[in-house]
Amino acid sequence: MGSETTSASLAPFSEKGFYLSEFRGRTLAIAARAEDLRAPAPLEAVLKELEANPTRVVLVSTEPGALGSLLATTVLPSGSGGVGLEGAVWRQLRRSSRVGLVVEDAPHFAPACREIALRLAVSKWIWIDPQGGLRAEDGSPRSFVDLEELQALLRRELPEESPERCSLLREVEAALAGGLVAVNLCTLEGLADELFTYAGSGTLFTRERYVRVRRLGLDDYDAADDLIGRGVAEGYLAPRSADEIERVLANGFGAFVEGRYLAGIGALLVHEPSHSGEIASLYTLTRFLGEGIGGHLVRSALDHARASGCRFVFACTTAERVEHFFEREGFRRVDSDAIPPEKWRSYHAPRRSRLRCLRHDL
Ligand SMILES: CC(C)(COP(=O)(O)OP(=O)(O)OC[C@H]1O[C@@H](n2cnc3c(N)ncnc32)[C@H](O)[C@@H]1OP(=O)(O)O)[C@@H](O)C(=O)NCCC(=O)NCCS
Image (cartoon, rainbow, N blue to C red; front, side, top):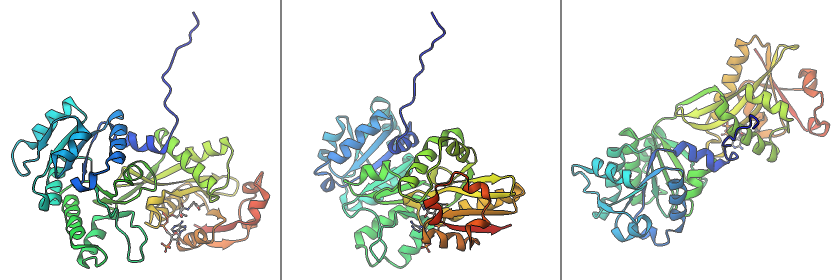
């Protein structure tokens, strides 16, 4: 026999797979009032995905009937505040990947859910609400809100939200202040998108806005490659050959919110002959657009360029909005001949004519 070996190859990268790997082996809490689970098909589909992953789920609702059909396992009374909840849930989750908890006291559903999520210290608390995530006064979605911003919103009493939603948001605040890392608020129909897509469908609340930028490692390359592909398809990023993409990945860095949620990527390509650095493949995930992630990535690239002895850093874009973004980060618009000539070797000529070139002298 030859020396052939069989190897288990990983499934091709997908956005959903990216999030499933984040949830693998963890426990999520999903809370929904019984009246919001009358047509539970979207939740059933998500529960199946999580079970196969595997991810454990604590499902909390107001009536045993709403949970029975989804769980096919024991539904425990939450006995909110009582002793033994943690042990009872743990025991149940060793037998099955889902457990149901019923909070009979419907008017106190939100505080009871917050208490359950905190006592069990779950990785995420997902709140299903027919109104979905928060919206700004102009109706645009607020897809990412940290604790400080939530507290500021609550101080001005959110006239656009009902008193019931405001009290729910106070529970979200208490959960984050109490130590929970993340809470999601979305509709039942938007649940899969909220959990498994870069854009999300509702609002992700996190305890902090702390953003860490670090070099991409091998385990980040699939996600980064996928994001670059999106940027190219959307027309924001220039198409690159496979070799160029590998160079971008090897010199790439990512911004992670709270050290764990990938929010954006970029790369600094050093051009030795001209002692310059090119910011390449800068891309912020939809959910985090306009939240300062691009700024973190650019400043980190500038630091890295200084440390590498670059004399200047440049970037090219076809979008006016992105041009202004770079100007705010201290870049100035220059002619394309102020960019190192090696950049233009084999560059797609029609795209070059549409480019806005930006340069930051160090
Ligand atoms: C350019 C980009 C990385 C900025 O990321 P970001 O995380 O939103 O950046 P910041 O939050 O630090 O700054 C946001 C500012 O960027 C500008 N901007 C550019 N494109 C934007 C977009 N699609 N949505 C929102 N803001 C955008 C706005 O001027 C915004 O300022 P404003 O909030 O006052 O309107 C991001 O828009 C992106 O991924 N664009 C697509 C890819 C691309 O063009 N890359 C650059 C090629 S080098």
